[in-house]
Image (cartoon, rainbow, N blue to C red):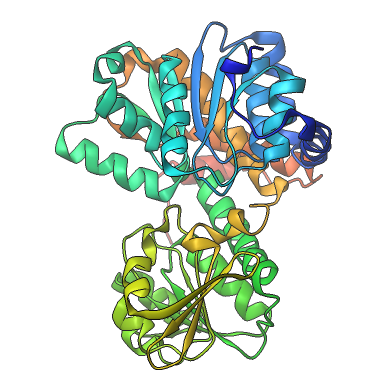
Length: 422
């Protein structure tokens, strides 16, 4: 591969990256089985894929699977702080996959890498936040009619894509992999729950037990994080704007209140909403001295960092790795983790491979489905087909040596008969 066909930090990091990729692969048996099938059947032969994802060991195994199926791939990072540089190096050296990803790259470099993926003129894109699809709509709209479609991995990205569909500007079919049950019920809840706790603890070494943790948002990610914090002994407060989700949080045993009320009592704050400026200047002003603030949503806009900077009389960068200390006029210090970027990848390693096994198996099968069925799809956002969900969940159960019941003929008949009653 020519140097111009990739941009990674250092190919000499590849040995460690390969070890990480193979270690993760040990805990991704469903994806490995699909990779073996793809290698034999070649369902993606000739398909050009542009992927804008978190460049991690788990993602590497997805890329291996797509390539085994015949895809021609360019991969770029979907966040400046989520790239594992050693993994990026190994993908280039050991798997001959074109990668444009460097941890800590500036904004100009980040979009230069997205341009490289767009310049691949992909037939299918994979997004983690909708940045690549947005770039294609804005910079290369003529290419959209040559594409089969896209797949979106995050809540944030699906929100953006549904807004595009509603506005009538979506130029290609999209499968919302994030909305698959094999993704959001497990990846978002158990993966984000554990990895967000992991990131906060790695960044701060804080003891959760006895502290008040404020969880902004009670979607699947917020639920997972809240339950894990409670399991470690924290007093958990949930903030919400959705009355149904607020009721769920209340009946799950959490205190529910507005952020304006939670700001003064919280010790640790984490946003998991997919929305903008969830914690703002008026909230920072009420926080205790030493409050810890993190974000586990895809983009760093969930925290209003510009307002915090204006309110501060002093900023100490990296008082600890991944911790910036803002001192307010009243002397209180606010500790912002990982520059407000997604804490589970910026300060930790992201989701465990076992849960990503399901998400990326769904992603791989959805890619094959999109390649085969694109002509019958409109420029809308679709949920992945039920048959993909069923297959992935059954394969995951089998990998854990778990069996389940089947309906008897009598039960099947009963469920289809409206006349049998009391």
